[in-house]
Length: 117
Length: 110
Image (cartoon, rainbow over all chains, first blue to last red; front, side, top):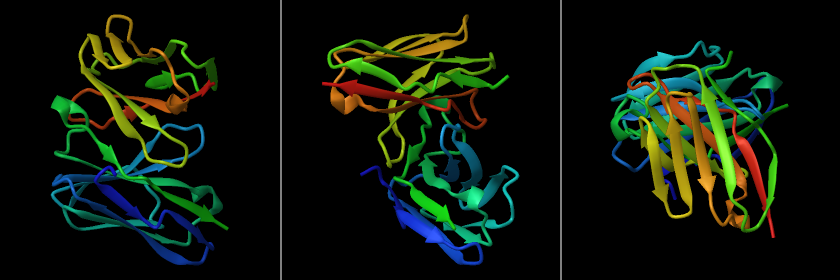
């Protein structure tokens, strides 16, 4: 148990579907993140939220739409995805926004395995 | 040139061996270095955190940073089958984002 819970763990969706990934952190952190992990590639940072405000969007296609209603919850809304979007989507949190600095380490959830058919 | 280079492996070793996992990087501003372990179909978990150069030891694990060579290492002593996982290095310069390596897959066989 990492303190970051993601649901669902597995999701299969068609290219015309709309679905959402949910993340909840129980660590009292102020920053939350969405990462994409594809086979044999480094983790790709998608979005950063700090005190529920989006502070970073790394050129992510608009078919991915994040939502952060409060510092403990983060959603990733998915619509009209492509097969190449199939990957492991990881939610993470850290005490503050600066990743890695001064012990501000990132804690990951177990991930949501997404398959687009 | 990638900011962080990590050999993807797989690395296969017998139980009890000493394992050396490495990353090289190009950005001299990096000063915070981490190693994450990721079991199959799980999220990464933080294993070691070091600041600047030097060594840090935690049980069977030792993290080493050589900033002059832009090279970091993770050593695992007396490796166990339960150490079989993918190991990700990660680093940052402070208030910028973490940069991850692609991960090295390790298999420890009995």
